[in-house]
Image (tube, rainbow, N blue to C red; front, side, top):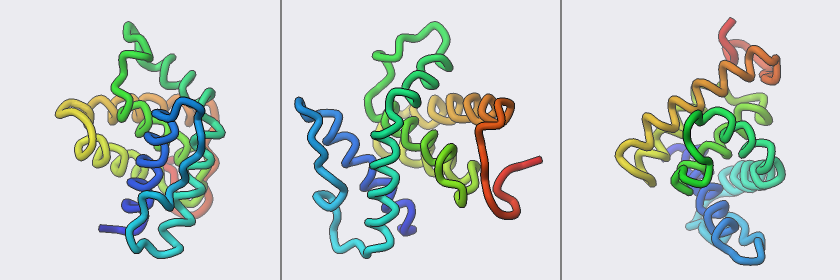
Length: 147
């Protein structure tokens, strides 16, 4: 498994633990790590931290993009994956959005329902286009955002 893919799994697990805790204590990604190297842990910690920090804004964006659907009815794992992917698109300048979206689809297929991959893809594609139009995406380096 690729390092960043593993880091995303750790961040997802930590988010799930945080979401399920009654007092919203931060478990941290280390609880779920299994002989993972520091590079994996560092990326995972940062993704987890930024996703939790921006949770409300990310949830508002997701909620606004699911027409005729209540936000609370979205499967929890799908919500967590969507939050994490949107956070990565907006705040991780070095990661191409297409990579982020593909990784989110893979996580949804692995950890959620049979239809989750398509659902996550649709929401992320829609929000990515919206973010581009609003000029909210600021990637650095060649090939990170299509012209």
